[in-house]
Image 1 (cartoon, chains in turn orange, cyan):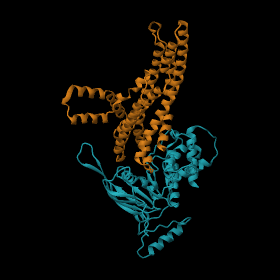
Image 2 (image 1 turned 60 degrees about the vertical axis):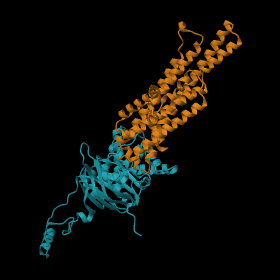
Image 3 (image 1 turned 45 degrees about the vertical axis):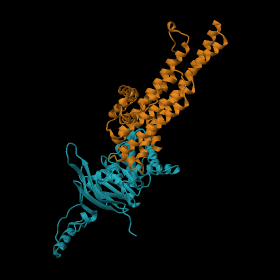
Image 4 (image 1 turned 180 degrees about the vertical axis):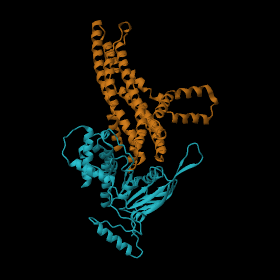
Amino acid sequence: MVIADHTFTQLVRMKVFYFLAVFAVLMIAASFFEMPYSRTTEDTAEQELIILKSTAMGSMAMFSVLFAVAATALLIPKDLEDRTLYTILSKPVPRLDYLLGKLAGVLLLVLVSLLLMDSLLCIILNYRTEGLIAMEIEKGKALGWPPDYLQMRQDSISQQGVTWDLQAGVAAIFFKAMIMASIALLISTFSSSTLFTIVIAVVIYFIGHFTADARNYWLHSQGSNVSQELKMATQGIALIFPDFQLYNIIDATIEGKPVPAGIFRKLATLTLFYTGIYSVLAWFTFRKKEF
Amino acid sequence: MEETPAVQINRLVKEFPSPFRKTRVRAVDDVSLTIMPGEVYGLIGPNGSGKSTTMKALLGLLSPTAGSCYVFGKNSLKTDSRQEIGFLPENPYFYKHLSGEETLRFYAKLCGLRGKKITERVDEMLEMVSLQDARKRRIGGYSKGMLQRIGLAQALIHEPRLLILDEPTAGVDPVGSRQIRDLIVNLKERGVTVFLCSHLLEQVQEVCDHVGIIFNGSLVKEGRLDDLIAIEDQTEVVIRHASDRTLARIRAVISDAENAEFVRMGKPRTTLERLFLDEARKSDSQPKEVDDSPELADNHSDKKGADHAKK
């Protein structure tokens, strides 16, 4: 807890929150976006909200993953280089506590940043949704739309506004960052270079997005010739490279689709499982490491 | 009942893999030593002789290839053995974004201190190392001497019974160096066991009561300092205001004595360090205009440290 608290302070004082100012400007700019007149369709209002959400969620996903990897990859080698690690580990601090403290500090900062960005998104999205509904009702009344159709349009636009499903999407962004931070933690326990850690983590990130497709394609092309051992080997690869396609609910929430509670629970469990596995492996490498 | 040694190193061997070779480099070779509570033990040797490796093994930062290390009877590979240890590494660097006070608070919390106890210990330590004026300043702006002193304060924050110092005065100016040595003597008087590594022999001689000499990883000599450096068959007499006649009579008495041989007579000399410190004290006691620039503030703080050390 002490190390997590300190890591959080350390990162805050590295002026990481400046990114939030960039995000705020991006959000405000996106909120002024309007569909070109020539491309106006029946669901223009919904499309505008989707673009706003897509911009925001894309920025949040990029920030959280990049930050989780870079910060985790940087902190342990920096402690070693500055010899602050000697003074910490010569205190009665178990090495596991040190590792988990660093990880928790990074994740705490990602969480706080995401919550702040999410709050900003909710405020702007809500303001924009209200405005678009008012415009749509005004337009509908002028065109003489029946009340049922007006209600349907209102519901359709609201579905693209602030919903609990959207919050599930933000949570999925955090889950991805959790896994990436724990992967970076594992690599940094045996790597002596921050750059190496970041590059390998990014490679794993990309592999994680294609691993399910590649496995399915390969199994499909092999037909019924695949032995049980090979099937188990592919499952093993899935353990090393997490299947990030499972986190595609983020895209679904941007499009305003509902996220079933069962799927969300499964995702949360999977995230804890992957984070736990990588953290335990990191501890195995770090507990006997010599300085 | 027999007292538990503060440090017990039994036949310690540490080998490192050598890149591009099949053989391994033996950094520490069969070193055994025992330090009893309250002793100040100096491990001296040239660079690369195995001093720091021995210390790291004692701190659990390295696993011995063979042998074992114990701190107050606890295996040094166990985390709880570190409850009794305070450690100051060579050329310590701390988190630059923290102030001196925040740094001590952080280390106090790591040692399990909580609440009011932290505030008490932080104030006490800052006063001990004369850094009260710089407590709110970021560590990034500290001078080398100040860093060494805050390092000493963090090592002592949890009142350890054993203090391990790796080259504690390396790179520190004579005033800062004197203050650190005075602090070590003060800790010794309070019963703290000190184990220090250095290649500055004069400084080790001044503060240690036991020494070990390490060369190429092997402990070649060890024992009480007084026993090791005393020239048993000679006696030193220092006389103030002796006239030429008195000195001649003394020489005559010696030449008349059976088995006694006159070896040398002359004026004892002060050390360059003592001369420097005297001049520093004199210039510090003279009033001068105050300048608030950071560099001068550092020097001022260092001099205050020297004053504290004098007390």
